[in-house]
Length: 257
Ligand SMILES: [Zn+2]
Ligand SMILES: [Zn+2]
View 1 (cartoon, rainbow, N blue to C red):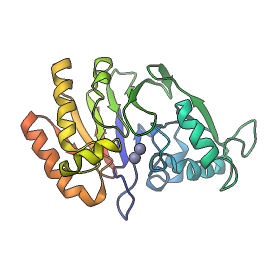
View 2 (tube, rainbow, N blue to C red):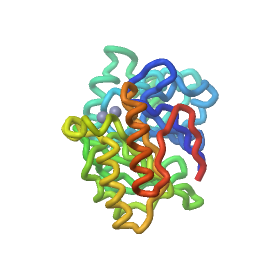
View 3 (cartoon, protein in one colour):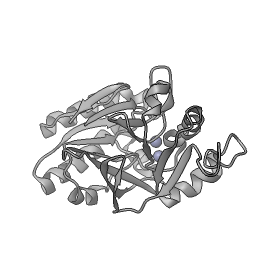
């Protein structure tokens, strides 16, 4: 299983895209910096998209993706919580700001086909076993454990904050892709807005190791651009303290399981 980090940042500037991942070229997770990272022929291979929550930095490329899919009259399945769809559909896909790709080019075969998923449910999507787990954030949000037919798996938390250790008992991934949005000095603020610091990450990983007896490789994304150097140093310190493989993700990073 090949996992490509298309976007590793919390805000967009030249060279830094919003959060998005791609598995083996066919399964996308979050749509922050999805279309700007991929050629048309690469986008054409995408079968399904999993959304973690409704925030704009994770969903906005639904529009540009819908427009591109229309070029080859294809269709992409979009999975999300009902609470996520309840915001995304009337805000992004209402047909006022742009085209409603849930009904275009035709109601029979629109560019995007949405389907609600339930927390704690398990479903085969684009050939992968996908487990949906609720995570703590400022709005309803889920993380996804994606397992390949060969039995390799990773867990992507999406945006989250401290208090997600209840997830650990359900998963045994070889790779954890998690967020750190800001530096330790802003820990209280980060907790309040549903995000992680390196210090909070350390607490969650400590609980993971206590419960599971190991730590997977950890890749940190959703990096707050202005804090990147500080986050890098603080994450490196956590890696040393835990004796674990933890590093920052970056645009077009490729991970193989
Ligand atoms: Zn968010
Ligand atoms: Zn976000």
